[in-house]
Image: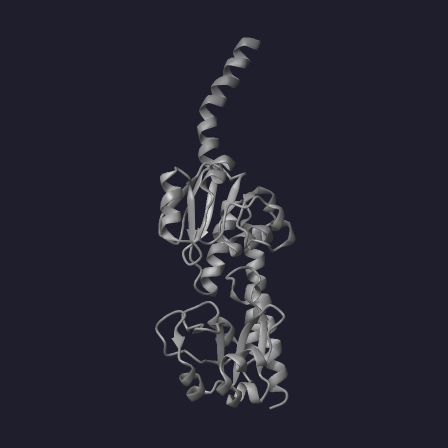
Length: 297
């Protein structure tokens, strides 16, 4: 009798085990339109992009991160993760040693040859390209699925959407001003309309200085800046920069409306320029600064 019971249990296991395995497997299309297959939720991952690293921690799965880059220093726990390189240099030997289940990288943050090399080494590579707010949400949703955190990702995104909608509503009565978001001072590189950074401007009912440009990050001459005379300038700061930083580089900018009216916002580069989960924090900060300037119009 015991023999028959054991035999039935064995047969049941043999029949159901493939179904169990199949139920654990899933696939996701990355931003290169490739279907990435997973047999199960990964336990060891590498992030080659700071925004991806931040998303991983937002999903409470930072313990699965076995490698990241030297630019992945937020949140604090990310600093102690093994470093496998930076934007230009990747330590492939270290990656091979770590044997990750999947490697995450971005189109804008990583070079094509890095992707190709990792693929040739036989690693599973997931590529994201969050160019706007919808792209940020897609990447976060994808990661939620990869790590079995779909519900948490959904809740977070609902919170983001709610905050964005409230800011958009509250900004309707703002006087529409021209905003120049400087990505670099020399050369003068401005965030264009086709970037996630433009969402700050658009949501708060402002006009992008470079809205006619087709490039994501067009470069302008110092003379063009004078001609267009932005009402507000946003510039990334390490804490040492001031209006003098701008006028020392381009003395003629002292005549700009933004500078004469003290409407230069010095902001945290990582907070504002990373297409990650702190995007909403940056948007809220931008809105608050605009609200202060609008109150004195």
